[in-house]
Image 1 (tube, helix red, strand yellow):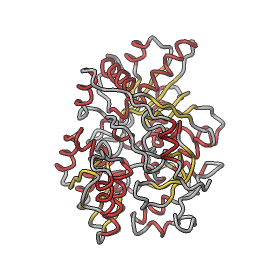
Image 2: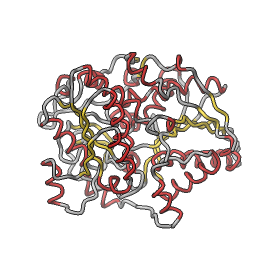
Image 3: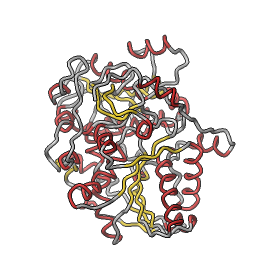
Image 4: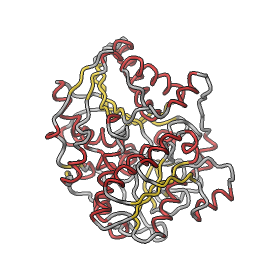
Length: 453
């Protein structure tokens, strides 16, 4: 194994997050009230989210938003993260492409999710909130928020998608170790959960379901706020520390990426890496290509409809402009639980709609093949979610080989897979399959969308 690392000092941790909306010629459409279709204002979000997060959600004007010093102090535990030249992977592929990855797996919880969890927990603490609640798919967001909540003395309840609750018991254990209460979703503890269980007793759950339960609990519990790990603008904002660091590190490497790749569920890690580099396209006329890699079993960007939709299954949230498969869409039980979400964030969806980013959908077996090659060359076992980015990177690197082009590729290793070994066991036992979504299934799930756009 041979790599080349580019490291920053802790003094070079960004002092401000980057707000890409300020530089977009066509802004994302606002969230709207489902009853009135009026745009949502920051104060409309205050009952659900912290005020600081709500204000950031609707900030369309400030290119940079200062990171509180208390948040930067905690970032110093693991940031800046390494940028790595994947020389061994390049040799294995026999490609002229230069492959770099930003290694977010070195955080205490093993993923990028802590970047926003610390910020949002801090905002809640500053506001005097005592309880917070959230959802989690694969458990990476739940683990990150559990750590952040414990640091700030907040009580946390996590609704974990049932299939991941069963598939990934050690992620559940991590959350409980930090002191969070973890509930398998759908559950009998909320009205939304009880209805779903009654209608579909064997339902394995989805992020949309878990969001409904978390939102309901937040709205019915005194001094409690809901904290979201992806999709919304303020979450994407917090994650831009990834790309801002990577910009400086690519300068150290003496190169600029031609292609930036990240896996895509709701958009948090893709946004975090891509948006700072997208600024060069929007403001400087650069021509960097951006690829969001999603599962073939949940292909909202590649096969979904650009329309207003709820962010959750029960319809508790405002309507969000997004590429969506419909909020009642039931994703297959793939092991990349963090990507099993029906829609994309408003910013990424607008960028995709305006052809400023691309998307690919990748079958499950291809992602595990790519993950195994990456582990055997670079020494890191990636999370199933991150393996989608690796698979897309391999596609691009092999294409560069055919074309004889020395392309520079940068991807986000958003998390390690050391708690996902059951999935690898099943892959090596030939016990995993690909899941194909039919056009009829997508049509049925999107038919109920209110046609607003």
